[in-house]
Image 1: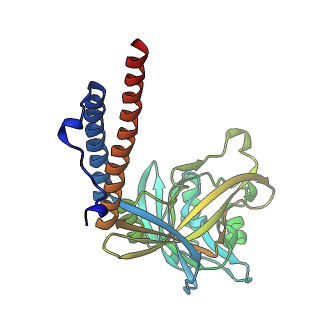
Image 2: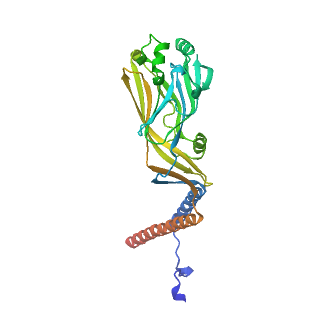
Image 3: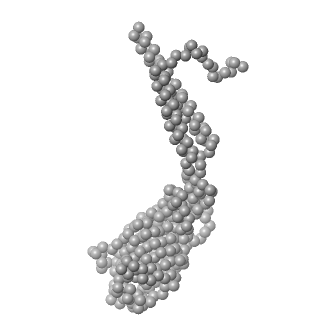
Amino acid sequence: MLKFDLYRKLPQDLIEPSKSGALISFTSLILMFLLFITEFQEYLTQQVQTEMYVDQNKDDTLLVNMDISFPFMPCDFISIDQQDVIGTHQQNVKGELLKNRILNEKVIDTYLSSDDTLNFERAQKAYEQKEGCELTGYIIISRVPGNFHISAHPYGGQVNIVLPFVELSTIDLSHSIRHLSFGNQNDIQKIREKFKQGLLNPLDGISRIKTKELKNVGVTHQYYISIVPTIYVDIDNKEYFVNQFTANTNEAQTTSMPAIYFRYDISPVTVQFTKYYESFNHFIVQLCAILGGVFTIAGIIDSIFYALQKTKVILDQ
């Protein structure tokens, strides 16, 4: 049985300690301890795994959450419409969108966008006293590529009646996007708290204000959005279905009625972020690799130093 011993021992009188060996051993112990602490912290830290696969979402609608302010555009003239590649064109899209009338930076009235009908007297007064508007809430759009746009298009002829001496192409659609996201707002809020991954609202904080030089010129704004369906799975294995997106923007002068277009397409690939803890078995394997690796390297370095010392002694003789 003795011949199978892989860990054979040397007699104590054949072991020779050295100062270099002591220094290397001490350094190795400190390094092992630091690496152990690092690996242990990694073991206790939640990890995130990223996967991609073909989108299998069967929903035919998509929630769009928004909070957009218009400092120079009365609520009466604002409508949100949708048009998709199928050919569907819907005015005043469905959802729960509030219109807040703003005067001197204060909310003076609030009503649902779906209850909106053009009140000629109120609209004219709002324009004359330079009211602004704030849109907050969500709309429901078709889950196919297309666009939703904010403009006064549905009220075109009526706007001419209310504002007979105003050139419609000069209507000022300056705006600030406080928030824009796609998906359930509650899920998005929870994801922000639990995850750091993803682009859920990259347009937040964007402002487009018309300059004085363009006062008598119509300006249309366009946002090009690429939506990526995304699933977040937390440490309790609860799934949250939302959408990441990236966006580019430009603006162009126009001789027709200005608008703000959000043109979007939807990726056929779903991204999934899954939180998990490193398994105990993986931790043990990593720990053994650290200890074994440091011990082996230290042994090699010690052998080199010992050989150099022996060579020096021989040369000195």
